[in-house]
Image (cartoon, helix red, strand yellow):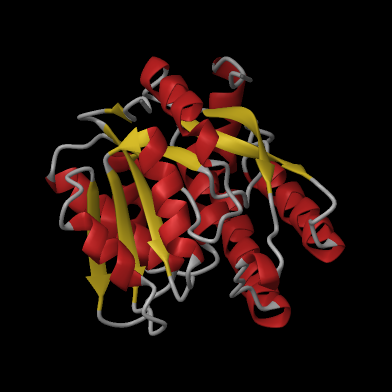
Length: 261
């Protein structure tokens, strides 16, 4: 007999999805084997990938599916889920991608770390294998360098890896304050802005797998468009960082360094 997934009244898994194909149902099944509840936000998909999980949700009380009428971007989909989670009384959300890159088997470990340190954000630090595109790996090194500067080396292990546990109220409040963080810029800007608020990062190593097309892999990353988006995002953050610098220096001088798991 298979064991039941861990469950929580405070922590949920949140999966945004856009045209993920058949892989979505597998990702949801893997997440549900580890945790309850799992919430999925369908971000205006047109490929019919929501059909099998909507059918599953009819008889699976640990699964909730929200369908947005049009594509708004990853960050917007996450915010939709965060606001629903906040309204339902949940305090923390583990975000993971729908495309199979993130390790569902580590959901329990990340949730345990968050339950032990609810004031923190639990960040996956990617461990790459041979499937990782070299340009993507090099690009994230650049983004990580900017994030370290913008937070005065607050301890963010990786600014782009989206397998994370966030405090729901802090992140939703941060996103509602401005109109950015709605698309591919969500992951790096979220951790920088939460670090500015004093939310401590706890880094945990986690594997990342880039699936080939024949394995069901789907990528909506566009090198030119999304790298331009990241560049403009870091330009904005650097300008704001200059204004925040005195306060950040004071906090760094008076607070303990972030915890490393």
